Image 1 (cartoon, rainbow, N blue to C red):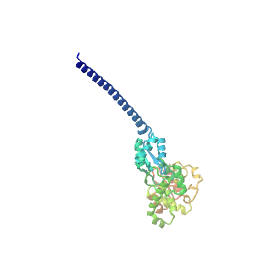
Image 2 (cartoon, helix red, strand yellow):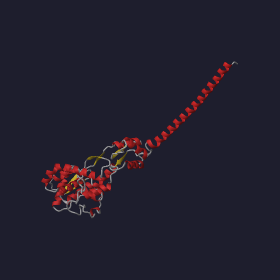
Image 3 (tube, rainbow, N blue to C red):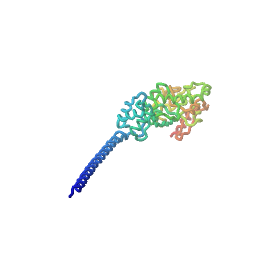
Image 4 (cartoon, rainbow, N blue to C red):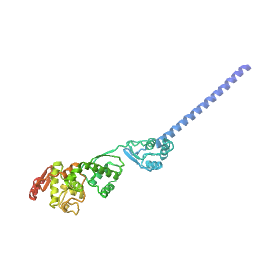
Length: 345
């Protein structure tokens, strides 16, 4: 083999060895890249699973009340404790990023109808994304504060029934909480509800101010009478007749003897009352006390208030309601007793 031929063979072997070495190196490099990508995906998956996605026990269909004065760290702790987020750290980082380092959060009610991740929640509380719908609550005529409180307790997540009842008593608002349909913020306070309902009452009663003056009795007595009428008769016309009877009883010094007062005392209606109930020692017992009760026994609507100042004069002194809701009147106690036998037994 000549010298030139040997050089060509040597060059070929050298170049081939370089090529094979580079190929081996390329395989190692690609393998490392693939491993690196796999690790990155794994870590991102862990991060996403444990910090970004919503917790499994996220409180769906709930409302979070972010109170005025809370710090963003305090809110982060709150949200973590209530299972809205998995990581306080990433919540705080997200809020800081979304507010360009100012870490501002906006107080209010935040509604969560479905699961949300920490990034969405951080954005919402830093931009006031409440998504909160007002709660529609209808409060019928003739309810007392205890019954109103029970309805509100079932509708509002932050409502304190005991506090509401105590405030109504302290502010002497029984009778002056106007029955109506209200649209309330979920975190509205007990004081705000009372103020709202009383303001509504004050607006509505203005329409009857002249009629009340002409009637000649105090607004307080009229509301007391109206609160009784709510429980004693259904229709405006029958309420007018009953109002005439009850005002007459007061004028002659006769006890009102209305069963509706016991609903305020012990929650019982006419069908549940016993002889012992009629002897209960209470200023609201209309059988053992004369005149109107110390306070209204319910919160009447305009129809009952109008009936109380527009009574119909009749010869009757007694009345009762049969099982079908029909009214029956009597002028004497004997006639009333006969009506009881005829219509209640």
